[in-house]
Length: 557
Image (tube, rainbow, N blue to C red):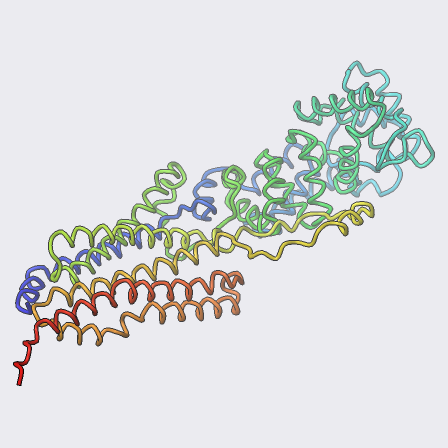
């Protein structure tokens, strides 16, 4: 037997090593491909932004178009990100503001606004300081001037918006025609003038007209009041042209509400969110991304803004968090991964599966191949395929960091406490104490189960090896007793897995979950029970009977 094994190894000693090297290489190639399912590599953002308009170039184009207000916000984002050329742009913008002082308060040119306020005294901030858009409409004389100007409008949408000022049933505002209704009246007039001056996208203009007509028909401001509230919030932070430029890219009132919510929750994010919305011309995608991923989403938008317009569009299109760059990631495959993401994802996980399968096949041939028959080798290779599938799945999860730790929390939300709803909340049943079975828990349980399957398989192979040896049954029995520690290995591995999981949970590496930790121990007990009760005990009984039958009976005295 020893000679046959030695001959087999001598004739095939190069093949297992070659398979291990090839498998490890394939796993490394798959790991280094910059493509993920639940996240986006900065390499892909860099590739998507290559050759597209940079943030500084976009800000300079706004400055050249005399849109000083939007240029100022986009330039502030470029300065915050420390982009090349941001300091020089700030100098040029300051020089333009000194030459064109009249553009500073409104943030740019607007012929309609000039016609409305021609001859009207400017109140509030000095002429050289940018003013919030709503400030132009709060004084009574200013509002009357706007009302007279819009009275001659032929736009049905403008007339529908103006008609909402006569509605006396409101929730958030004091009605416009009552004492204290100046904020609502000013917001309605501002909305109508924005529409008249074509500062709104077509889809947003249609949306508002429908809401205004629905409010007038119902006799209550419910249909459009939330929009007025959100627009008032934005107009307190943006000047006229800044607000108008953003509304020209906004598709609907829902996006206005989301943008206003973000700025109320995190005012410091205004330059980044504004710049990303204007440069990518996708404010709905930007607000949805920031609301979904919170401060982590804002950081992802900053990463995209550093790379250019194409990167912003790619990130907003994917709607996944940005995955920190691996130091060994390959730039060479970034272009292919960006153009053919599905194909490259399939290639990546095929590399994982094929590489792991090569490694298992090499171990099969080097360790247990010589002592098995051809039929059993086929079964052994099939088991190797199953194990390769399990472990390639584990590699897939490890290569997707946001599958285990989850996406960044959506922390940019505004919580409104309403007493009535608070009382209702107190009457609800207490939350269930059931275990939180998330994806991380499932992956951990599957991994521990796969390890115990491997231990179970090794124990069976050892039994088959002893069974096929041409030695007496009693000697086989002694060999089986010598392998007791191996047959108990499942329990040792289970205890070690539980201890490791608990330590990692204490250190904060993985999410706290006792179900995941103790599953290793449970699988270990199950594995040892199956090995000893189902296989070892019956085989030992068989060996004892065979050994007893082989002993010759003593003659009677």
